[in-house]
Length: 144
Image 1 (tube, rainbow, N blue to C red):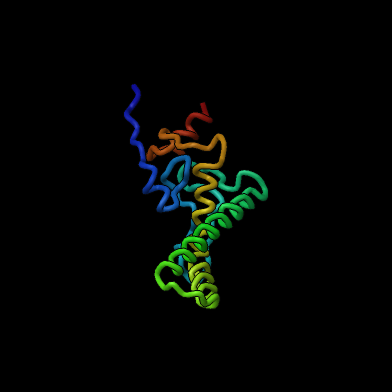
Image 2: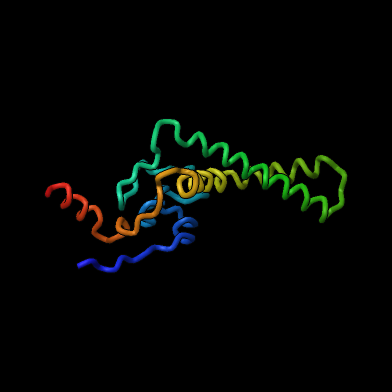
């Protein structure tokens, strides 16, 4: 008899940096902003997904982070121009670089999340792996 699987919603899992396959396990060992930097876990604690699919896999996340940074900088430049009307280039440089530095932990984390959630072929949400007893269930299947 097949029990009804609980589906975990996308957006809370994405915002809280949960595993893209089960949406239950954490992707990072600590908070986004802190004194110890961000530490990405090697595997999902719930479904045992290895996050770095191949060596150098997260180099693509640097390109995503770069695109995010460019979008943020252009948006800031337009906002500064509209709000202040200033032509002083130092105002733009100081504000844009300060905000870019403050957003770098955000860009680091969410560029990896975007890569795993949307840009990795073959990696998608599997509701059966969200079950509370998934690892125990998986090991029972392997034994039989």
